[in-house]
Length: 456
Image 1 (cartoon, rainbow, N blue to C red):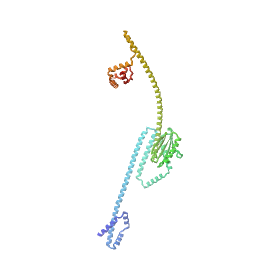
Image 2 (image 1 turned 60 degrees about the horizontal axis):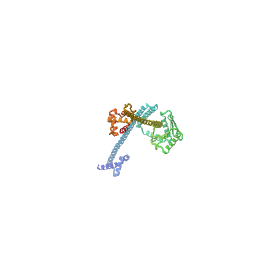
Image 3 (image 1 turned 90 degrees about the vertical axis):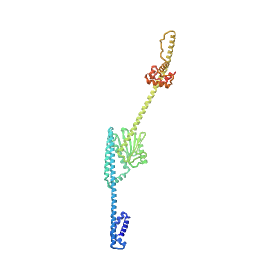
Image 4 (image 1 turned 45 degrees about the vertical axis):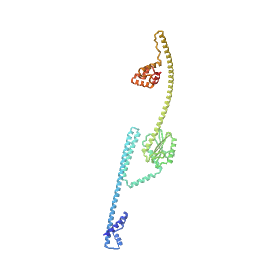
């Protein structure tokens, strides 16, 4: 038995070094009889004891095979469980994507509903546009949700079909892709058009004319549209060709503009995904987005139109402002002439006042002299001065201000002004214009002038 144990251990050690495929192959090729013959050859004997040994080894071999099968079964079960877990995880992820899309679609629908409610106050065409947009989003959202529901049941056959369709789409020629892109743009511009008199013409077959020409007489706009549905925009070919078509179109049409729309790329070389250029009142717009849909095409088109109209209105306002400024300039010149005329009249009257004051002063002096002579001869004096002179008026004002503690010979100009200002706040009778009126002096006389007269 001890020797059998040694032999068994050696066999087990030998078998444990074999791979799973090798063990399968060994099991298929060996039998109990083969084991017995093998040991008989090694031992050189053929007796009952050897047969028992072989049977024992065969039993041990069968047990090892059974153990390996059990171990292999556990591995298969583990792999199967992992595969089931992965399928469950993928199912959960797809369900989450579906819920996220449903939530996003609900939010988009709500947002468009809010926009729609505001649009009820706008034009009827804009209202219809928002209604159709909401309906399209609803249909698109339902389609997306149904798609992800069906995705859970897709099998390998469906995947092959999708691959075949993918290769079919990508094998289309650039000309075919271009035709599809132009039709998508035309469909977008015809969908609830904002302007009733819009004219949309496919000119892709006309050499050097772009792809689409749009005319809107009511707003005096002509538009050339170049459409690209390729995955790459070539600067040296596509952009150069567009520039040539654009310049020719600008030359042949007044109030003309141009659009370059790329439906299958995220950016246009040198212009990015969104760029608008104004050159002498002719606008050029560059718009690109991969898989650009009808709503996005409509938004880019009408937003471009609005920018053109706003700029035109701004220029009209500037023209009006220039006209207004010219009118103001003319009025200013007229007013300047009137002011100069009045200044001349003021100067004349000031000179006349000065002459009359000198004449009055002479009369007053004569009256004073006559009164003195009359008093010396014993006559009563009844004659009065013709009017008070400026000096006399300021002398009376000085006495009044000193009496009411508004002026002092010790005051400087700042102290005099400060003191008078304080006094008139305390009592309105001391207000400068009232005091000057009382002494028949001009109300417009300033503190500095008054102080100079009082200080003489």
